[in-house]
Image (cartoon, rainbow, N blue to C red; front, side):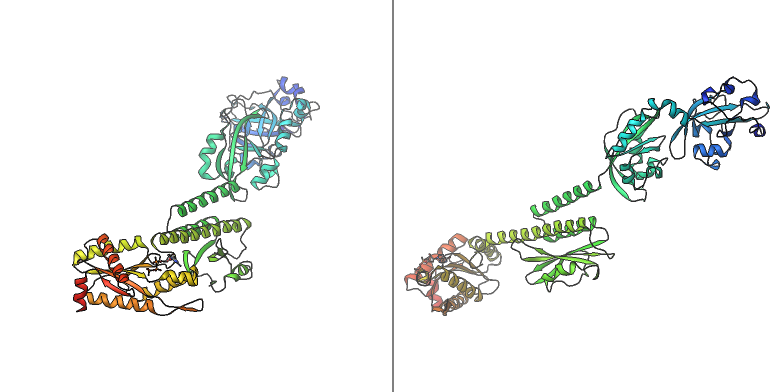
Length: 576
Ligand SMILES: Nc1nc2c(ncn2[C@@H]2O[C@H](COP(=O)(O)OP(=O)(O)OP(=O)(O)O)[C@@H](O)[C@H]2O)c(=O)[nH]1
């Protein structure tokens, strides 16, 4: 070991390192290794492996000796023959001369140092002694005017964008915006840390490709998942650009937090998906389940439930939280309880209100932890409640349109189109099973007088009343339809004999003739009915309807308030 002579032979330098020509010129080994008090001494093996690392070196490079012992000197100091870890000679360390180079401090800073190597005294020794001196201060004084990084650093610091500069994978410069973004209070918390510590593992390959120091081209913005110092993840957009920093290759990275943008995009996409389900007529339960899943995906620790007000009762239609409190009793109180979820159970519920301000259902969320929903969550719930209202009202509208296409709006009886379908079906069944059926054509007598005396509104009420009475006379397998005006068709299926048809016709006439009360006034009506029976009065729907019409007109001609079968002979036979 050669440390014994070091302190005794170490006069303090009085001039700048470059003036220490004694080191450069001295041939005497003992005098060559004088050093200032702040020089560090590092001993390395012939292979360049650090054997000892003194206190001054530790302070100068901010690294503890146990962290570097066993490592290669070129891992700490950028030697001319970079990357090689070999003998002192092969490491390009001249003996008896000072050499300027850069060293990496543990905090990522790069410092200018001068090195000198003393050859072993004994030829048999394999230990080389390297002196290291921090010349950053001197360099700063002499080179300050030439330091091009100063304006760059100032610009970076002023930038509202988060900017990080790293060299050899470690941060060497971060501005305030970057510190805030990564959750650090000041840059020194992050200097020297690796960029890979802040990027989700799944994105490491892409990060490496876009930020490699040898990559000569700036990379475009790419999206990645980044991690703050406390481990929380966020969506980031980053672009990398190579540059020279402190005369050494470096990479500048601009990072933006795009979490909010991604959240809004995702909400927009979900909204479009749900509206698409509504537009394509998907079943309501499917749409509401999609809404509930959408809420749960964007609201952590939340289970969502949607109940539908069907008539007067609420039914659970979607969602996983079947055990929500029963809030159906007083929908107006729902909002009240939602505002009190902290002191109450951890759930939040709101009514789903339709366009006409009517309650359509309830929308509720239960949290698996006691907390208030955030502003973003409340906004999301508002969107979803509106989507649920659109879905429910659209379903109601579709059902109404479907109903109106096949039913009469005034009496809600099937219309002529639906009746024709019933008739075709009855014909098929009758042909297959050889079973007769009857078609009645019923027209009210002197209905015009009702309109003329009591008014059209009253006429409408009478038509509704008559429709209900006629329906009440029939079996549920029989069909009745309003053709328009005061005309009705009735289909009596599975007719066993004509006597049964006669009985039904008489019952219908009796029901029509009962007193009707409209607007506190009494009125009386009668009807004329024509009857055609399959197969005798027709083998197809057109013939049967035409013959029922014709029989009804005969009933009118005969004085109204009666029924007639199409075939007189058949009618007379039945009457006989
Ligand atoms: N209130 C009301 N009246 C209607 C409606 N549709 C048709 N009407 C009226 O119903 C009446 C039907 O008259 P008709 O069947 O031709 O004659 P009527 O008075 O019943 O006489 P007869 O059939 O010969 O006994 C007309 O006055 C129509 O204006 C409706 O939806 N509501």
